[in-house]
Image (cartoon, rainbow, N blue to C red; front, side, top):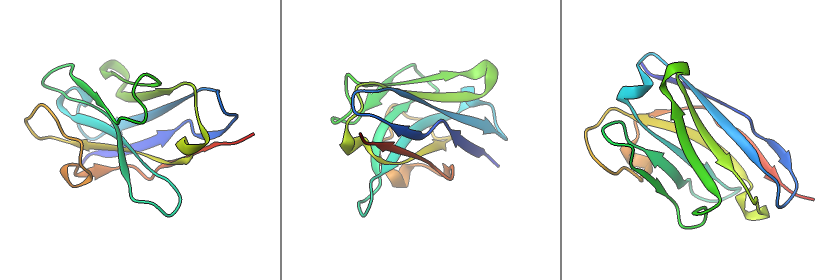
Length: 125
């Protein structure tokens, strides 16, 4: 059973930066497709970024391209999301997600089988 635990959320001013972490246990990170999703208040959960295990290919949601970077360190079983130039509309609960499928692109909520509990990111002055 894959377990995911996020950390690194908090309160940050507009224009600031945060780095989220997701520690993976129960299976080698190198064999998992990984993603970040977020859920703003009273909205649907939406795709932020993903990285596949079979290839270094990454994908990003349109609203975060050029500002967020997803990365993984298999040696320490951790997925990261570096968030720069944060905006108030980035305020949300951020979730780490994983699946063990074989493919090149997974960006939909229903394509992920394992989820963390989430970490709150609030962008406000």
